[in-house]
Image (cartoon, rainbow, N blue to C red; front, top):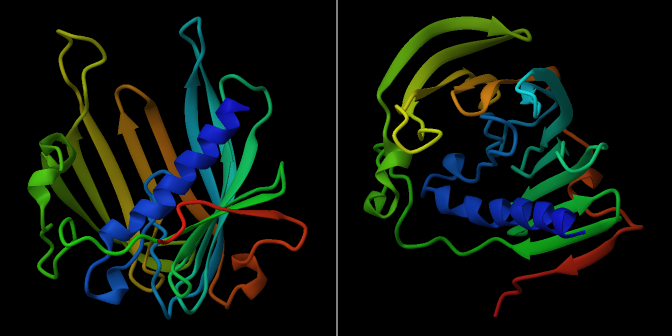
Length: 248
């Protein structure tokens, strides 16, 4: 029970903190990083639906590793509402659990749906802070408040243009330092390779190479650019709605 509550609370914290990344330009508004390097931004005028496939490796107690594949879905409507369906695999449980996160910039609220318990946990999106916002020039106001380790980029490589799932994409590879596994061990680098679609305004594929966690690839498949069903961004009628962090 504690693990389930922690998963919901963590997802909700992410939903309510994404407003920190909102800039004055609405096109750079909200973003979610629940899906392995693919940022589902809340951008109006770019609706789509897609399946999400995440491939990674799981290290067993004996040191061997096995492949792990999880699946989900992403949706965004023309007004910028987003819905991300994720599958969480717990080391403490044999069966995976599914959660749905919804961000509605129109109603200024975030929501986590738990299909297992049929509950919808709702929280208002926070007001934009005076610091910590991205600027039009690409800088970050209040960057001194962010740990230097989180901002450190050792190098960025332009991978050029390509095609994925029938869409034009541009690729980039970023390298940043990763923490050493233990004291005295040499720090290795973490590499993230992403392929971004200017048309859909989202990464269609992201690959992360982490010396601590191994390799993980996340990609979008079966992409449809029509408007999703409006009901996808509302709690189902048979769900119990719980509101936390109410506005005062």
